[in-house]
Length: 638
Image 1 (cartoon, rainbow, N blue to C red):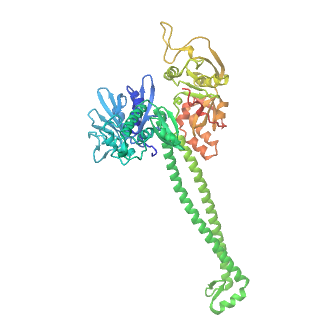
Image 2 (cartoon, rainbow, N blue to C red; image 1 turned 90 degrees about the vertical axis):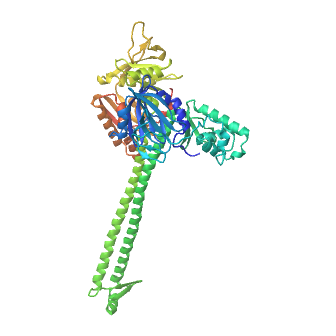
């Protein structure tokens, strides 16, 4: 089985069943396109905003880490915005029995189809209701179809039957392959990973010849195909890992597990996002390594040339010095030889003395040449030393650039769309960034035993501290209180501290007394309130390592200092948030000497820092931290 680099038809069907159908009734808010990747912001009442990412020929899924918006609007994105920004998704499905996603859209009285082809050489395009192409990410003419504006869209050739349900001719189709596994792939059109898993579960060698299959074998294969397809529609994805992510699929890969692969289970979008983010990082690393390798080869070649040159200069300097010393020591004897025929022999070397030049003058010339080549030798050694330093700089550059690429492609956890903190004992607290998120946090995540927190000020995040079956300590409660305190209106007002109350989830309700109304993002609190008093508006903000990549964390300064590579302490002030974010990034880099760490900070998007700054602020302190990885501990009590 080869490493997987694109979604199969089964993957697409499974994704649509779990995630794609949920996009129905969403509104397309915005559209972007860059480097062959399309991503769209979609908003649906009650579920908030999501980002759909599509890469023709490879993948389509929701992502928590979309690419940075390009500085200039791509013409393709501009064309799509013209027609479908503000449109409503009315249906999501496949086109035929192949890796082609069709999103049907409605805007006023107009109907459109957004087609995302995941087949090789696939495209993304928009058609009208009559399948006339309005825009495509690329225009081309192929043997069997033309992708061009105003042309009728013709999908790529595909199988004419459902490979998972049309099993009546299975035996005949398997005979199209040299062995049973190729028969399932070529004849029955099953994805390779699915075909291999079917045979593994059926206990049939994949190298077995089709003619050797018994009726019982065929019946067993049919049964497993049906069972495995049904399993694949249950909304779980799996990722197989051996050193690096190797494959993903919507069924439990028992064959790969038997071969020693580690397998992770998760939601389809979570697995797909993580898998393809990893591929992007690997590709970026390969690009950087290739670039630096070329640079290293150039320097190494120069080093070898410089070494040869230095050796040559040294040899000439020593040779001239040896001859000159010999002649000077035995000047009288050699003068007699010159008188005879103008030539002398020193060791194995025969020398011709220029006519009219004394031997003494000739010896002075030889000493001068020796010194000249000695100087060239020293200059060559200096050049060699400079090249060695340049090579070291390139080695540092690769470390820095690789770290930078890792940071750029960081995949965010689901809770990072909220204000969040992981307390010192591993509890996750999340808070809304606005009234809609306050509503979402409480409705979706607050359970009876959880803790609800709110600053004693109008205009603060509603915070949910997820406790599960554990009991948070006073320190945990104080850690979580920083989220509602520092992101409240008290920060804007420039206060020094604020009290925070908390209750159990069972005490929180959206149901008001009869005849009363509860505003969006507001809640009814019943029973006794407990307090975390005098939470200081001094926010620690730093960079921690989470699963090998950096992310911004906030919280009490002592906690952030412990977990961060570098950190700062903020207080309410007069400097604009964006200016604070820009300064923090520069100051953090200045505190680090290691190229890898500098690269990690450089790769962090300023918007990620900006999102964690509560408001206008002042920077009280910037320092290196004591870094401790804590991310996996709370990845989630969801």
